[in-house]
Image (cartoon, rainbow, N blue to C red; front, top):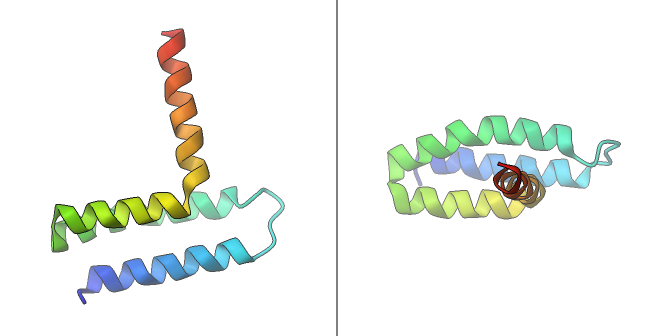
Length: 83
């Protein structure tokens, strides 16, 4: 396993730990941290392992952080309707 995939496994473990901890802001602060770390990590995985593995990691990350993706899609749809 490459170093980038090892980092992704650690990222996924941290994401699961964030989900288990109680949170007053519905986990948004943790999601922001995971997104800020995950985007460059996704680029590193894609660079080191190719676009198909990068796509698999992207789908896995989107399944863990699904609410930010849902809100992004709602925001895009709302901006398209008003514009």
